[in-house]
Length: 150
Image 1 (cartoon, rainbow, N blue to C red):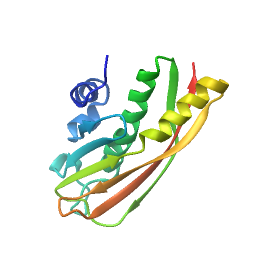
Image 2 (cartoon, one colour):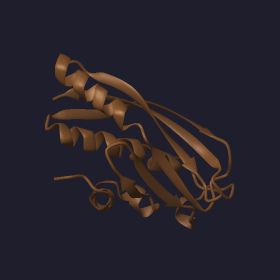
Image 3 (cartoon, helix red, strand yellow):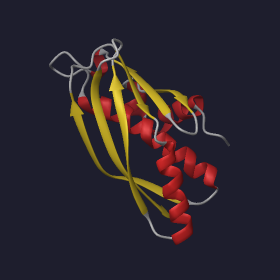
């Protein structure tokens, strides 16, 4: 089964209902990148008139994690994945539609190949940048993913 944006959105509804209810959706995914989107709404607001940071984090993590899931699926191996660390920076209030993009699929290819070759777990950092409708960066999230053979 190939992982697609549509299948990931169904997965969100069933397995990550908080993200789905807040409006996080996968818009595009290919071998090299993934794009997610979330719109500022009543359900995902903070008291300061913008999107709650954790909602932005869900959309950003999905942009990186969907790539990891897809690459693991393509490898045909039983590999576990986990976020070990993350960091974020915020530069502008998140209002309107925010698009998160990660175009770092090559990092995952290398880590999976090393895990299969050595049998040892691997760690790697991936970044998702959130951009508003004006094209301004509102937040940047970095996630340290760990993978290992099961």
